[in-house]
Image 1 (cartoon, one colour):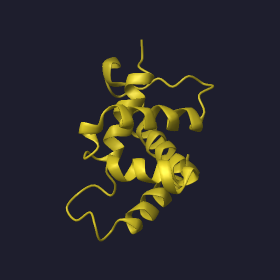
Image 2: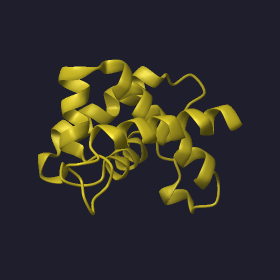
Image 3: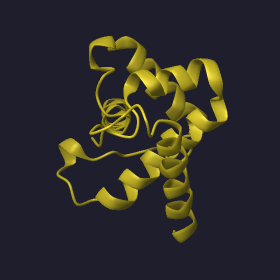
Image 4: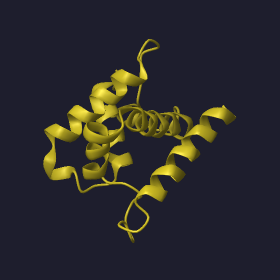
Length: 116
């Protein structure tokens, strides 16, 4: 579990360094920046960030939230699938792209993989 958290922190720190000057008093990265990186720059960095945020959410939230707000990922879901779900959600909701990327990732994953 420590290694997952370490990867999550490294992703956050690397992304914060990329946008440190342009995101004062905001999240490290918003939906517009996430989409730009995912579509143009680097799919590996995109997937690492999205999977890191997802792992962090699963670790911190676990079963502590009520079932309407808990993510239930199937055991066979891949990082690529989570990334695709997130990118589709961000593209389909352009009005929300100014929001924190982690918030958009959480919403996309929650809608795609709710606990039933």
